[in-house]
Image (cartoon, helix red, strand yellow):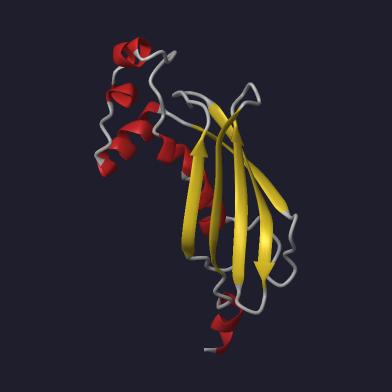
Length: 146
């Protein structure tokens, strides 16, 4: 399912909101794939000794919500050219995070698109902000002509 309008109709200010609850399995899969075995992700006692109230979801796993927007919620393929993130507060296993992704720049001549994401936790605290710039590849409408 696509949530943003078609590339042609999309405009600066358009946004989508979606949610994800991060599970122990998500963290296990992510740390296994990336090798990020930081003790604050793996061991509740270490996380507590570091001042956290539980095991912390890896920041890039939370930031990966932006790739969901770029890879699933757009109407055409969107390879990223640049991404950046600010990690503002920890995300804990079991928390549901709300991501709001907004179109901040659109350049139809170069097919360039910039999206900004703000992620908030259940207390409405901003936990991650991010931005991605990439190029829309308007090929889906052409598939029938090939």
